[in-house]
Amino acid sequence: MKWFGLTLLCILCWSTTDLFYKKGSELTDKLSHLKIMVWLGIIMAIAAVLLLPLSEMQMSPIGLIIYYREYIPMAALYVAALMCGTVGARYLDASVASPLENVDGAVAAVILLVYFAATGRLGEGARITPWNVSSIFFVTAGVILLGVQEHRMASSERNVPEIQRKHPLGALAFIFPILYTLVDAGAMVFDSVVLAGGDEAFMGQFDLLICESLLFALAGVLSWLYMLTVKKTVYDPFRKDELVKCGAALTETTGNVFYAMATVAGPLLTPAVTTGYCGLTILGARLFLKERLTGWQYLCLALVLIGILLSALSEIAAG
Image (cartoon, rainbow, N blue to C red; front, side, top):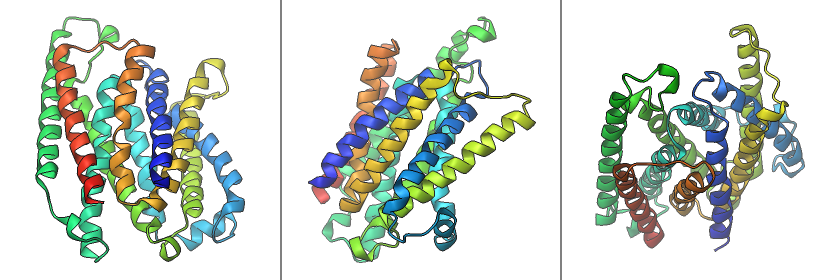
């Protein structure tokens, strides 16, 4: 059960990350997502240097990018997913966004189930079970009802000054966590496929981490340059009030290391189990961010969480 312990550490890191993302995302700051990307670039660049001695191929950073060039577009999905997530953090409470984004593990698990079955690497567990169907029903119902609630709350703020509105986009804000879910599910599938098989893996876990870290470093540089040249904003990431974004980058990076290590040991189960971290995010948002949701929102979130739990239990039972 080595993969399970590593997955739990990943869950602790990423649930904390969600809180940092929300804390570092002001609704009035239209560049907050780019500023977070700058910090992710800084921390991931440091991680790449620290992990380089552990590289399975023992190549230079540029050498790794060239050697794995056919995998780089898929590895970049992780960067794209986080960009969507950090934009969504501006418009949605962490208690709402995190469960919606956590559906990624369930989506990835279903895709992986089909992939491993199609390639003859899975037995009878590949069949669709009533748990899978129930999971899809609960998640879909919860997301739709959450969207209805978000639209109603946005409508009730029509006469409120724009700067004071908490739900300016209404249900449209859901496009960001939904995009995160779809893109990150693809990233999770890629991680599991290339890391599965031990010595037969397409890519070593540390090589994957280094390549992803280098992509984040590039995204951080491009984000900083974009703010400087297009938005005419000189961003200083080391200001005291910006250090919360450093916390987000640290926990995101650490969680990613634990996730890659867990995926090597449990390529099918790890994505499913990581979906559980949204529960800790909701608790943390209540305790530390003082988020207050309506009873209807909690009911909708309960439906999503039930769906996520059913999916995770289904994959664990199949594994």
